[in-house]
Length: 375
Image: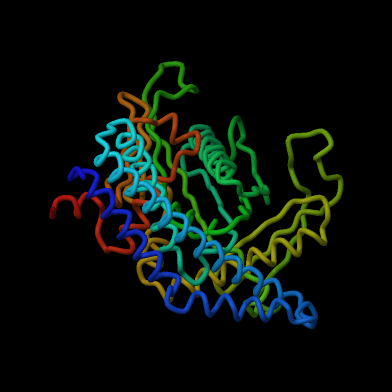
């Protein structure tokens, strides 16, 4: 077996070992038996919330075991084919098996990173907020581009995207937008996107065709599970209703149905502008509890806390990523040094390499570039 192929096999085996560690492989089969026994309890659904959590935990374990076993089986089959091809001097079989190994190594590495999403809220749905920085129309247009980028990313991963609120720009784009993105590990993947995003381009709004720099802030926080108790003192909040401003047509509210909740101790402000005021109160309160829960997570995790505190104003010195469209094409993450010249792909939602690099850095404590420099 060629040295390159042996290295691929070693990489896949390392990924499998990490998957085993993360799921607690030695007790996985026993835990699955316990889950199955509890699922058969006729009284299980007397407590729907508890039953749903049990079913999610069981399915998560089943998925982890199936992923591990599938990769292990494909690895064994490919190695066996290579050995057989070498014995029979069949270069075509060897080449096909080696190609399969390369694909398997990429899939195993992706599952390895996914297995690192084991934070307290990583598996949860998430809220994502985008706010335009100083710069008027330029920043509002950039905020709209970012909103499109994240919606595209979410849709590619099969996540459900719900627009919670949006404030249009005076001339173009949006001043702010808030989304709820639902799907397994939505928060775990998107949490690395919190921070200031910087755009450099020739402005389509400048008749002199000059380069402009725009900033927008992105904030990501988890949707709080129903079984997590977050106490909100009614005396600490102010609830305002107002008439939502939309683009016109059937979506314009004719009553003061939009809701804004201000949490005085923290200064947190959340809004929702669906058609029903009752629904808006519920959505906004959930968003507030999620924000408060995120603050508690931040206190437990110094690295995340520092990232949020350093977010500051959407401007120079606070950016986590630069998107340069002129005079050259490049997107670069300033935390990991991961970069690409495929700016169109990134703005169309190809964000996985950036998220993976940040996740790996948070686990290892160093950027990929630093790790490569030590090799």
